[in-house]
Length: 201
Image (cartoon, rainbow, N blue to C red; front, side, top):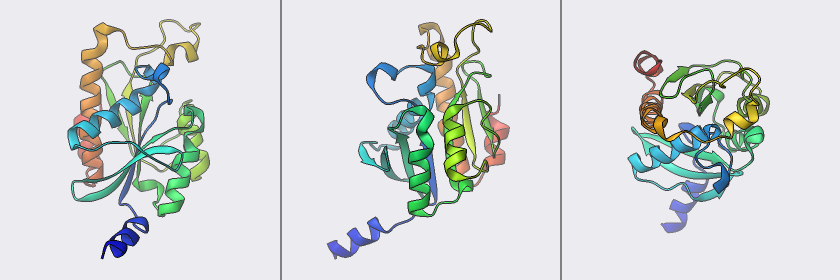
């Protein structure tokens, strides 16, 4: 019986893949670019699971959310190569782009804001650009977490997204992270319209 269960687990597919984007390593932990990782960490706390198993170039967890079997991922490539992990997992488990939810930072939104979309272009985000390239599709739902605009047009973009959230904005960030995990649950429950109505801000 044990062998049968193990075989079923290894050959299992998933209803959804949920991906939070970021850069691995302690130096990036609380940076703007790691908002997706922070959202997955919060989801893990809320749902009571760990994201510790290394597979498909990512830290992953096999989770039941709202009766749907989900693979939660934190790619351990650098941000700009996120598609390597997502594409490999999608191909291995035969999960279509429409069932891959990507959670990530957006500099066009103020801290505390979220935006849910069914699909779309990369919008200048290199992690999303990599995922689109590896999936061969833009048709995946995404949850964007506001990290704030650059203080001025001349400010270096890399320096901005790799900078840390100021302490005075941590409450707003927490609100956005909480709303992002609520939105993910609704999308997994096939209620993306409700997610957009409630959490597009």
